[in-house]
Amino acid sequence: MTNEYSQSNTAETNHQKARYYRLEQTGSGVVFKPVKVPAYIIERRKQQEEKKQIARVIAKNREREARMSVRSILFYSLLLVAVAVVCFFYLYLQSEVASRMDHITALKTEIGALTSENDIVKSRIDSEVNLFDVKKKASKKLGMGLADKDQIVYYSVEDQDYVLNYR
Image (cartoon, rainbow, N blue to C red):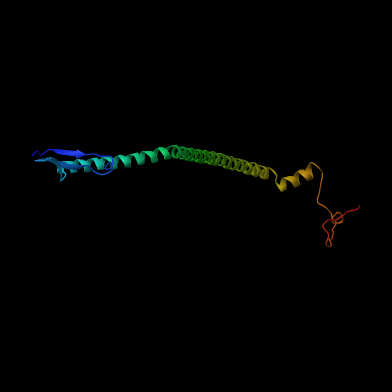
């Protein structure tokens, strides 16, 4: 009797797990008797099956990445370009608003300065033009006097917007 293990791989059991047999020598010849699969073989098969499963998952993930990569990269690139353009225009508009606000502030300052200058000129003109001075210049330089009663003409307006004077 020998205790050797033999593995059977036939075409019909290709998809099945291999079976182990023990060779026993009898008086009439050699007999193959099935034996229980050793524990180290079972462990090795589990490890091989786990490796195959991990390899299938990795292959599936790689295939999905390869399939998605061209479309995804193109989509994300276009999305990135669109976001960059929007950001650029947003910053451009912000700078335009800031420069216009500065321009408006400068114009308001200029308006304030011109209004102040205008008020100064107006007060100077008002101080120079005095009704008493006008009356004095009219009577002395131009020989004018006060109007007599017969020089004063009164007009009455009856619902008209203007008066015509024919003399």
